[in-house]
Image 1 (tube, rainbow, N blue to C red):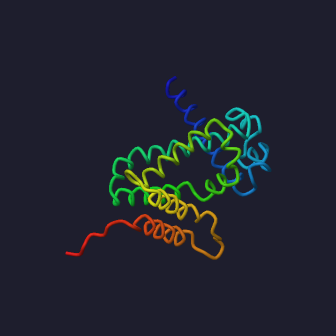
Image 2 (cartoon, rainbow, N blue to C red):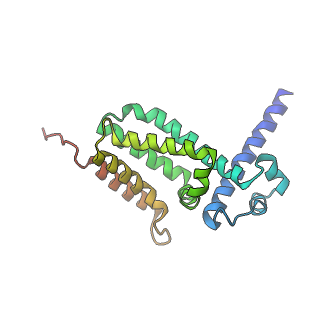
Image 3 (spheres, rainbow, N blue to C red):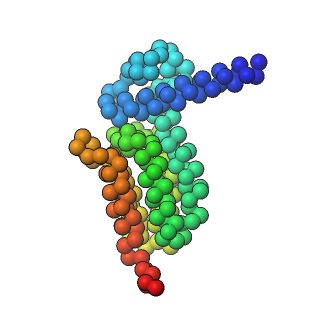
Amino acid sequence: MIDRVTEVDRRRTDTRDRLLSVALGLFARQGYATTSLREIADALGVTKAAVYFHYRTKEDILTGIVSGHADALNALLDDAIPRTSTLAGREELLRLYAGYHAAWGLDLTRLARQTDTEISSLPIGAEIRRTYRRLLDGLAGPDPTLLDQTRARTALAAIQTVALAPTLEDDEDQLRDAALTIGLEVLRQGQPTTPPN
């Protein structure tokens, strides 16, 4: 009996994860406001009732997407933040975030930019703001100056700009590498250099 319950739970989780993934793609390509629950169900190959079983509204789906993002980013930050007292630790954090950003795909950044107002008005909006504040604080380092804080924002923006760059002619991996290079250069500006041996 336990195996059957476990299997049902696993299938529900798989369906929920696939639903969020499909919705994320549709929201990013078509726009959150113009994508219907019916389109999500059709793209997923299920009935609208199956979508309702997991999420009653598009806001619930958006919350699910943002919540998953916040959880994953907070786990990354929990691991990396303790090492950000050094420039090497801050560089590591930016590299980890760049890898995380690539793994989540460009759709998430596009969705966030399109739905900033909607996300801000949801209860999860405060959580995602706190999460990005932690990321920026980590990138800025201990006792940051205004310049350090601005560098952190600029380095983060460099990573996120890949989602806005044209991808028809450009290779996304090359764009990501270039964005990371620029982000790291920004973080290093104004930092004391170690004299050569």
